[in-house]
Image (cartoon, rainbow, N blue to C red; front, side, top):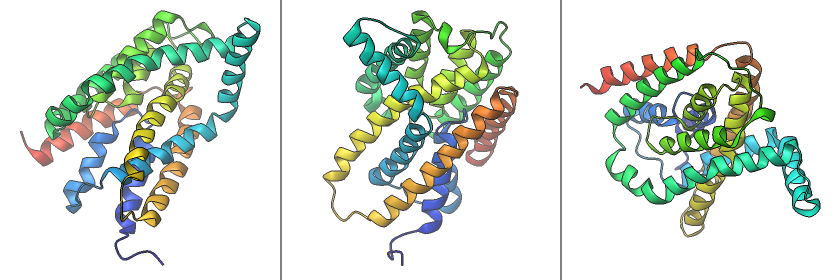
Length: 270
């Protein structure tokens, strides 16, 4: 039996939204304000957010477990034997691309949370970065694979990820956009974005976990349920997105983002 304060419907809807929008280029911020507005739900709180992010982290760790083991092995081999390989190079590229987002989070997170977390910011960024993704998707010469990554490309993607701190931007969307502009193939752009999400989501989950351990009166049933639903949804999302995007364009997501932004504009008014 669920606890009396366990809102199954709310937990399910929010966990499904998190699992889908964390990795699709459509912005989780834009989606999470919709159920709150439509159903009058209060903010779910820091602990619930942590559970959702932890579910997404578990999903991406399980899905890319072989890649991560190969990257870790490559980095260890390079450090011990002074000899790199494709996996170790990918590992260093991911590390480089992660640094700008870490700096942005440390320097600007409070400013963003207090000044930019508004419906109108989300509407503008949802539409603007959706259109930018559409332009990038039409960019010529998308022929490079992850084995052809340059330090410049990794840095550009990392700098682009800094913008994800602004609500409505979409971390996956902006990193895929930067990768497409850097001539990566669609599937490789998505793969690098997903791998890059691991330290980003992991860092956020760790900070929230520290706060969780300091909390009292935690509804563990709700948190574990939300984490599980988020993890399963995110895993399936990654799996099918990577299968589909190699043969499809990003245009359906572009159209969806523009319509979502216009829908939010209609709901909240100018």
